[in-house]
Length: 385
Image 1: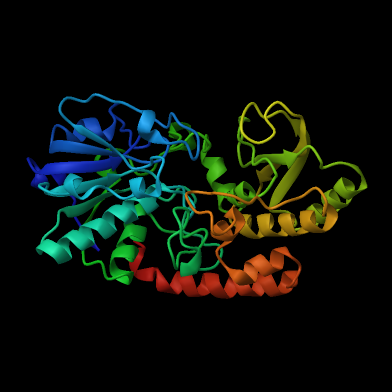
Image 2: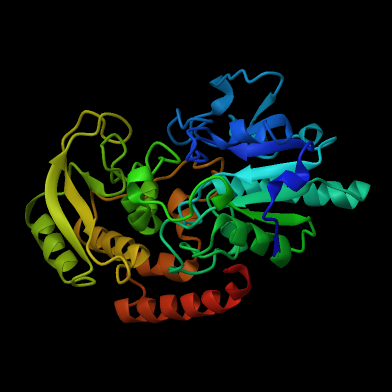
């Protein structure tokens, strides 16, 4: 990886930036404001949710409007799939594309997929013209550390919520993952990493957490998200419309003897690494808005031992057995793809999908996950620092 510790060396360069409110500095300024004092900032690329995370998931940013001097605002999450790729003219006649946006450590999280699409376009531009802007990544810590979970996403399941070959919980920083893309897929872009510490202390507490998107309100949310995001592909509420999305989840039909049996089965799963608090909740929007749901709060007690993906897979498998008439996997368009249901795009692995339908034992899936996680950890060693 190429590192640059003094960003002033690029002073005066024409630049475009992918960023949002998560890039906020100790001096009380958003980083794009600081960059405008260093670079000739020409374009701001907007990710999903907008510059200040105003919009909910899967809501087009075409409605957003900002005015920052003469800067061009380019929305990279519109109503059509083509909007996800930056227009070629926005990448021409600039020296640097800056990526300064926080990740939460899961492959579903779309910000680094947007960055990957920019990286791909720079690669195409370089092949066609012989040159392309520098891809400058302002790197920040992974909020859930270097632990990994899951299995590689197969190419047939690739979508905006997952780039091929990456695990569900990848264990890399933005700079590490984007360098992995550049080298593994032979994109040959000039990727340069700058530690975020030049703008903000690297060791920050959870009290300084800036929500990168509307439904990641705390750092704790990031620990459950690698598994609980799977609930987006089901008729369970993943807690959107509550104050603790992904930590709060359930549905109106979780009642009766089947619910009691579900409680018992979950109590014996990954014993000691989490607690499940039974509760009722009323989503104010999204699934079951205005309807009382029976469900849980997921409380992670031992983050190093808790396996969020396996928790979610196991939970969904039990639901499929105990609530066969009520529980469903959703169909229809999800993140611009309609050829596969959301659960397939999120899980991204035939073996794990078969497990959800009872075709593999718990011990088999545990072994499978461990093998894939060990392999991935070896593969990404060059991209950790």
